[in-house]
Length: 215
Image (cartoon, rainbow, N blue to C red):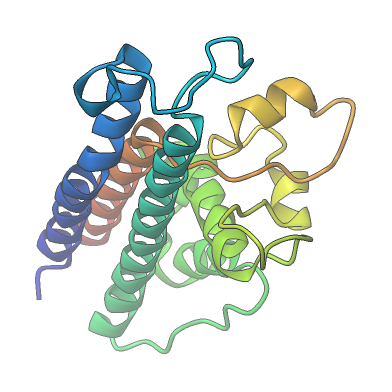
């Protein structure tokens, strides 16, 4: 089984999925901002003296939808990366390491001890990969107040402490609540840009592991 080909196939699928799933919501936001399409005219009953711009609810709904698409893709990326590591170990007839409490670090130690592969010598910043893993935890295991009433997700306390300036932290939150002034977890925002950063990192890192194993 060619693990590199499999992970590349997964990553390519995630890219295509995001492009297709995000397109209608990106279009909606663009049309509202540029007053094009069905948003070129003010809605019925709209008061120009109102402080809020027209179609604000539609814009926010499209923005939330984009984030949901991004979060889904990030979770699938993390699962694909973990599947690759499982496959790597199983192909070599080894039992998986105990990964309770920070499986990323446990796997890093396992690869160094069992295969003498030092992850720190890889072609990507490991902080990007660990940030991805902790972000996925925040998406799927968040416990913040209000999680039942909206689709927003926040960092876990561990994630906030480990990555106070996470690439997946909402930019508005970071501007309003600078990390040096508060430790309050930020809202998670997965965009095309930061998702692509992680997809590229996973692809390069998995290829690196296979190259080290054959060297």
